[in-house]
Length: 124
Image (cartoon, rainbow, N blue to C red):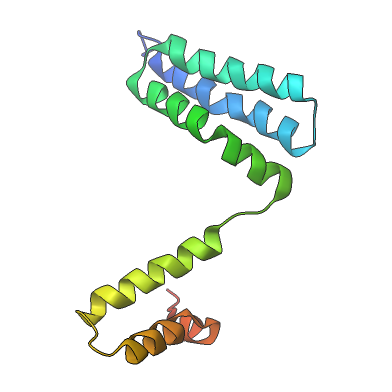
């Protein structure tokens, strides 16, 4: 770090490490006051650094914190739904416009079945 005259690398590294103290507190069902304190400390560090990437990171974490906190506390996510939505959009895009609604629905159901998705996976 001797070559980092501006201290940006050190600031970015510290900003990376701050959530490592924050997330275990939330995950363990810790004290809400301590969680808020550590979140504020992380956000303040990012803002005080005045590094554009850390400012963006702080804004993103601050915007999404309720959702992040809910996922950590409950373990519930909407990833499966988002995945199905992605598959539906891909099927529609590849079809270039179905004329028959039944065929369109049939093809979407076919692509959303677990067996079909497993058959299309290739391992490297």
